[in-house]
Image (cartoon, rainbow, N blue to C red):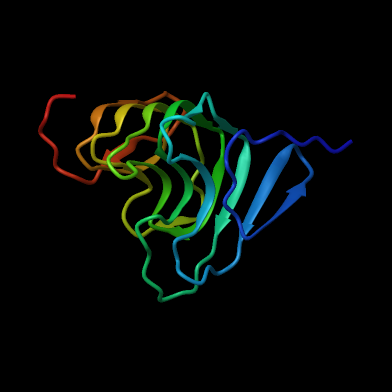
Length: 178
């Protein structure tokens, strides 16, 4: 019996297909402007915030053409704008992009209280870093999350390793107390 788990997020994809084994598969063909986002959790209006989004147990493959530069919005899974209390957990991101997972501001508005937990980045090549937490983003928890981190002056980003998981390595020199 085929089991498919729902994705509670805004999907920004070129094409999508479902696969057995309880996974949702998102396939991204080469985008024309290289601003592709595999899965996007996003709201640009304060009156319509995205709250309590859960992106769980998905597989996203980013495949832009080789030799192309990446745009500022390129990520396997991205949280942006008026978003609060979101969870991205147990997803698998493959391919090439600016970042596998990104939590970014949108026109000065920042996501609040985002949790990234045990997402797998097998066969992923980041142009910037595996994980990007943008300027001013508040209260981001990286729980048992593998990969490199580009922290662009976020507020209260916490890295909590789990014994069975890989560790996050900061790629920026940030001496501020978190």
